[in-house]
Image (tube, rainbow, N blue to C red; front, side, top):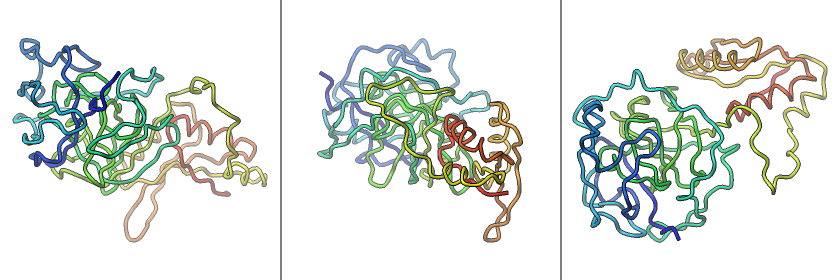
Amino acid sequence: MLLVALLAGCAGAPKKPGPGDAPVAPPSPRAAGPGGAAADAAPADAGLPLACRQVREHRDEDYTPGGLYAPGVADTAPQHALDISGLVEPEPRHEAPAAYGNRSPYKVLGKSYHVLPTAEGYVERGTASWYGQKFHGRHTSSREIYDMCSFSAAHKTLPLPSYVRVTRLDTGDSVVVRVNDRGPFHAGRIIDLSYAAAVKLGLDRSGTAPVEVRALVPGGPAPARADSGPPAADPIAEAAAGSERPRIIQVGAYRDRSNADRIARELEQAGLADVAVEAAEVAGATLWRVRVGPVAAVATHQVLERLRRLGHASPRVFSE
């Protein structure tokens, strides 16, 4: 039986205090996981960028069941700069639930957590942090190897693995990450990003930041579940169906024009027509709105469903 301690990673600023670090995973044979090198295979580091080489040996005495990993050791950023210009964000895809890390409920530091049955529809805003060199090369809660140079994350309740888009609310920057670990267990934090993801959002400099975490659904319908019932009523689509007037669907509004352009390109590549990026002045600041339309009233529900399958769970519908 999996020990409750199969958990990992909490972090914050480039040098973080030890007592709030991550929950532990029991020691086990080192094995390479997706995007990660074997934890104790030092020679394999030779071809890696200097920032991605493992510098810490993970010892048996660092593991405490139900507690934190090496609480007396501060987490740090790598000494060498990490170039993420060639790093590709993971593409959401259907995966079988991880054999480890999905037990529910589980307990850390005396508190119980319940794993969500599905990531579909999950959206939350809160504080993001990151974890780095201290955990690089050790097992995550799902028994994959933590690779701080990939786009991954730790979350307390999303099923492992899951895919989410993390958007920094104060800048509009975003990154897609694969959730394969448990944490963070600091009060008030909702997600722990890998160091690479932190660099992309600028958290390697700020330590923490306000974010929105939105689950992404792989293209196409999800596999049927034995307990799935009829789909819930869609109040937006029902309202739209009440009139024959064309509709405009707003996918989102972004402070950063490049983020809006990226979302628009993704929608067009997915086959959506009439995608536009428009500027709007809100409270003295310019926001860039990504909109689809005009859409015939009878087609509104279909377009909304396509957007949700692409990971845009909360589009807004307007009459033209």
